[in-house]
Image (cartoon, rainbow, N blue to C red; front, side, top):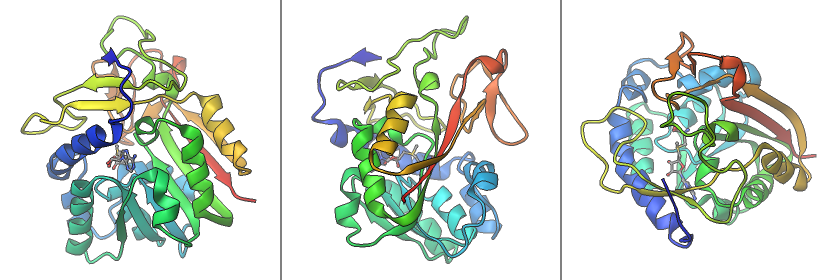
Length: 279
Ligand SMILES: C[S@@+](CC[C@H](N)C(=O)[O-])C[C@H]1O[C@@H](n2cnc3c(N)ncnc32)[C@H](O)[C@@H]1O
């Protein structure tokens, strides 16, 4: 990774990277699109993990921010919510719409940057904003994200976020001998600039759009941003697992499809669930 002062191009670079990844993800076993097509009650492993905390979402009007190829969005629909998925990557949304069509599922997919979701979705207010698992790291300003969430929720509406933990994002994944901090923990104005030819699923070709700009946000900054909007925090739980192989060579895949540290799993939180509601 290299640090850089260039912030202005993050949207163009990141969108090109996600457009490049989308068909690879749709074709990968990890996203299990065939199971969605062939098993009417199949849920993504992310949503399966979230289920105990999500509870009964039947009849809720929900929006999934940064929905990617729509597998979590579809899972929430299968649980009975009426979902809208929002993402800025047209290639991701093309895959999401195709899957919805193939499975006869009614989901609205909207192309938009997260930060303008309130304007784009108009006066609609939602019972549920769902997001996470590699979403916040693409956004430079967590306060602006929280204000967007608050602007989308009706009074009494709920935010459900499960995300990679900022302590995990700060670990140097290349140092296999020890858990070493290699990246910022706190949100910086400057992005972290990465050049990577691979994505987090196995794929039959390398990426051609290799540059991404990402940001970390500390726990206090995330919770503070949520509280600053007037939302009430109802749950903050740290987990010893994540749904992807975040530290290759040091993780073990469990029966619940989550990845945990092979050694000293009690030393590092890997993901968290944050829930909040509008008063
Ligand atoms: C890892 S996916 C998160 C979704 C989900 N965890 C999954 O794996 O399907 C990240 C998504 O965020 C989207 N994204 C990144 N920056 C965005 C932005 N500024 N506005 C809207 N979507 C954005 C990308 O296009 C991508 O689809």
